[in-house]
Length: 182
Image (cartoon, rainbow, N blue to C red):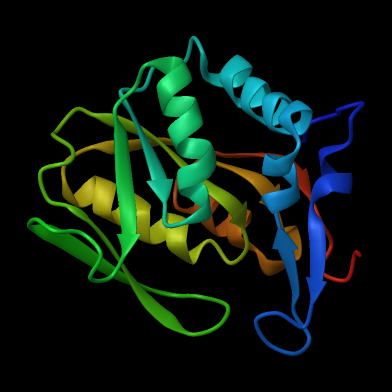
């Protein structure tokens, strides 16, 4: 976890009962409205990965695109988009997964990666780990490997980071929240 004097956590807005009653949604848009906070988030990831040995950055639809694209640009790495079903125009491969709210499919262009590629995958948060595990399965189906899964937020009580690590995928998050933390 990041020990930051600016306190990234203070700019992550809790939205009660969204998208359903009993859920506290972690809204990262205030981080992106603060140039200082966005710089701190980006620089924290850049510092961690600037000398790391991976070939691509993968970003999850949709909030993962925000941070993934910044890091890909700053590290001069190709960006791979993992999209919700039906959003990509060319040949895709798909992977189903369970979310905390139901079932979904993740797709990626079938020609995005090759054998021997190594991918750092980004999302805004790790909850149950379903999206990132689906992305990891797609990466592996293309013959590549997952370098690490990274996110701004971890919700450790939902077990996603543990599921990823049990699947052989290291994880890194800048901050974490308890499920009831406001």
